[in-house]
Image (cartoon, rainbow, N blue to C red; front, side, top):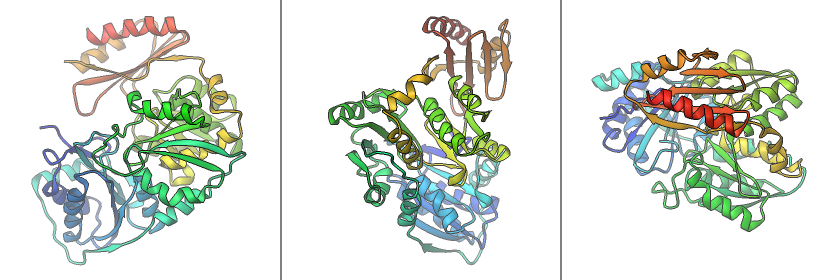
Length: 441
């Protein structure tokens, strides 16, 4: 059976891989590993079908281990992040499987000091205790409730500074952004929102809540064109990712969106560090450097990105998957936060297209998955390539004349993920064929 304990969170099919009983043991284990007895810990959940049961078990485990749980109800992951700071808790947990399909449930953990819990920062210990069923009953546990959505909406509202009115189509993917927008949209003067799939529904009746799968954007793309909207925005199930389409309905790669946001922060804070993940187009670090900023490359994953941001006191970080992290938002990612920052940028320009076009000077493959039998052998073949520079920050990155490729191993299956870019379509396709042959052996 697949292991629900991942590098960045806990995620598995409900109830086969993650159920109320396992969640109960995880609650106990979390309390022990993070030393939460006698402390306050925020817990929220998304709209997935398995989330109520997983939350119930997890909270019961925390309470029996002496934790004062602050239940913030049905919220997005960024709202839970806001709640931990707003309420001053010793971290928190969001019960969510993010962008995964309907069958999944999950738990995202943040510990005291707002440190994400993942591989190397407590996840292994939590798994070991939960698997063993090692319980640690303690007195003093209880459940309090707190309403934070209005305070979160007020926090976001302060971001909006439109230069002109905008018409925007928002596809919530039947995820948690719909609930957040009920509180936020009336506070956004000048932003006319055309709603799509905003009713939270863990059955996902319209499409998966994963905006990085282009098939999930088809309805949004058509609606943007039909409405004559300035742009469209799509969100994932728990609301921490955002992807855009322009007024012609064309998808804007998220690494280029990183570059757009970076420009704004560099204008505000000249010379500041901007973090980008190593799958991003060369256009991203080139833009940052051209504006006098410090481009900082990082490996993939929120725990690594947040750590890198702190080390470099970065103002902002962007990930190819549509996660955008802001120093001003506690160093965390937020889909609606990014959306409002981008709305400001777009309103000050002729169009989103006019902002993106100058950045489209390289040719990227997007992420391609390969099932392989021997991942170390794949890496060895890549290391042996002649006339390339090799980096092992995250998987293997090879850089040649005018092109680069990164190959990373999946954390959960015998799969490697390839991202490759060239200066021309012909170079991209030629190098893609060569690297594909190496991967397949």
